[in-house]
Length: 113
Image 1: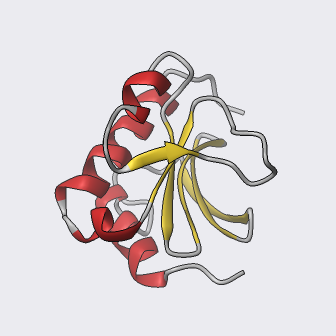
Image 2 (image 1 turned 135 degrees about the horizontal axis):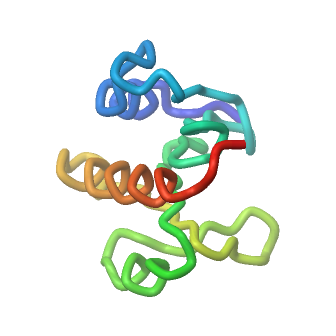
C-alpha cells in the first residue's frame, strides 16, 4: 500500500527533518505506510492518505470525541490509544498539528526502546 507522500512531508516539516531538533526521531515503513518514531516509540504515521496518531490509552476517549478522529483499526479490532484522521480534516493545517503535538507529548512520556 502506498502512502500520501505530501502528508508525510508535512509531518516531517512539523517534526523537523532530517531529525533536526529531535535526533531521537526516526522514520520506518510499517503497516503499509510510514511511521515516525521518537526514541523507538511510534508517534504518528501515514497509512494511505490518512494520519494515524498514538495518543495513549488515557487520552483516547477525549481524542475520539473530536469530529475528525476514529479508532485505528487494521484487523477488525481497534488499537487502544490510537486514532485515525482522514479526509477533509487533513486539509486544515491546524488539524494535523493537533494530532502530531498530542502524539509527541504521549511518546515523550515513554521510556526509550
